[in-house]
Structures are given as structure tokens and as C-alpha cells.
Amino acid sequence: MKKVAKNTEVAVVEVVATAQKGRPVNMNSARQLKLKEAAAKKAAGIEGKKGRPVVEGSNRQLRLAELAGKAENGTLRRGRPVVDGSARQLKQAELAAKKAAGLLVKGRPVNPNSAKQIKLADIESRKANGTFKLGRPKATKVEIESAELVEINAAEGTAEA
Image 1 (cartoon, rainbow, N blue to C red):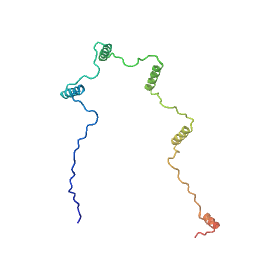
Image 2: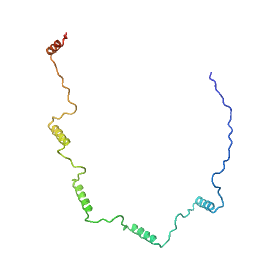
Image 3: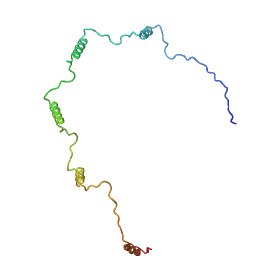
Image 4: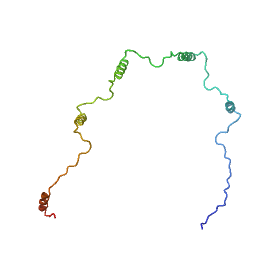
């Protein structure tokens, strides 16, 4: 039979109120009253204004209104203007023409005289002829006739039965 130990002690926990750290808060200060009012407005669903107030009729507001009007009309031009006939535009037109014709080649050009390209060309020609074999070549077996083996063994001093 197993012995089971029973622990009947109950721990008593005392809650000790710790002193508030830092400077005490005056709940009647202007800041605390303003924060309390803002929290009440937020709870009621009323949003307060944030940031710097807008001055109607300022140059900035007039410009923003003008840009908004152009955006609605679709006449708003964004970005740097394109200069027709520039070197970049000519190059882009040339690339677009090559791409449309299917002549666009990307990457570094191949050197046909390199060792790798010569080897690849040789492999392709052997594949075309049908003389190219895949994989590892077979091991070559050297067969010795039994008469030669007897002579070799006799020379070494062993006899084959």
C-alpha cells in the first residue's frame, strides 16, 4: 500500500496596500478636468478636434482645393513630366520595339569560343549522331587465360589445383 502525505496547512495571504509612487495627482487640476471631460465625450461618441486648426482662405487651403478639383476632373498631373526625344525615351521605344518583335535578349552574351560552349557543342553534335552515351562508362574487364595464370602462379611459387 502506498503512503499518501496530506498537507492540511492553509496559507494566509495578507494584502498590503503599497504607497503610490511619484508625485500625487490633484484630481481638481485643469489638466485632470480636461482629461476627464475628453474621456466622457469619447464614451458618448463625440470626437474632439485634434491638431492645429484650419485657416480657411489660406494659400495652402486654396491650393489643396484646386488640386482636389483637378483630381476629380482627371486633369491632375502627377510626377515629373516626360521629355519626348530624350535619350531615355528613345531607348525605351527601341526596347519596346525589340520586345514586340521577339528579339529582346536579356543577360550577358555567350562566348561561343569558351571551353564550356565548345564542350556543349560537342555533346550536342554527338547526341545528333547517336554516339553520345549517358551515365558512367562500363568497367573494362581484363580476362586472363588459364594457361597464362598457371605460368604466373608457377613463377610466384604457388600451384593451382
